[in-house]
Length: 108
Image 1: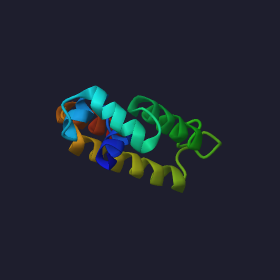
Image 2 (image 1 turned 90 degrees about the vertical axis):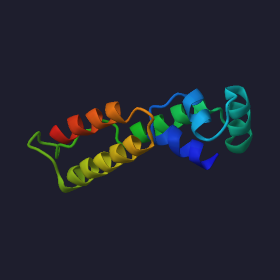
Image 3 (image 1 turned 90 degrees about the horizontal axis):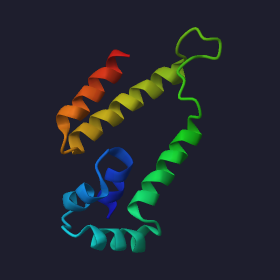
C-alpha cells in the first residue's frame, strides 16, 4: 500500500493502473484495501494530496515578487520539480510521455 500511495502522489497513472502495478488485478479490492489502510479512497487521497501541494505553493510562481526572475528558493523549487518528474518517469508505464514532460519542463 505504501508503493500505491507513492504512485498516487508522483504519477499520472489511473487507480486501475496503480492497482496492477502493486500486484492487484481487482480495482475494487485495491480501493477497499487502500481505504482501510489510509482512511481515504485512492482517488480522494490523490485529490487531497494535490490540493495540499497547491496550498503550499499557491501561485506556483518562480518570480521574486517584482517580476524580474527566479529567487534562490525558486531555483531550488525548480530543481525539486525536475527531480520529481524524473521519479515519475521512472515509475510510469508511459515513460515516453513522462520524458516529454520532463524535457519540456527543463526547457522552460
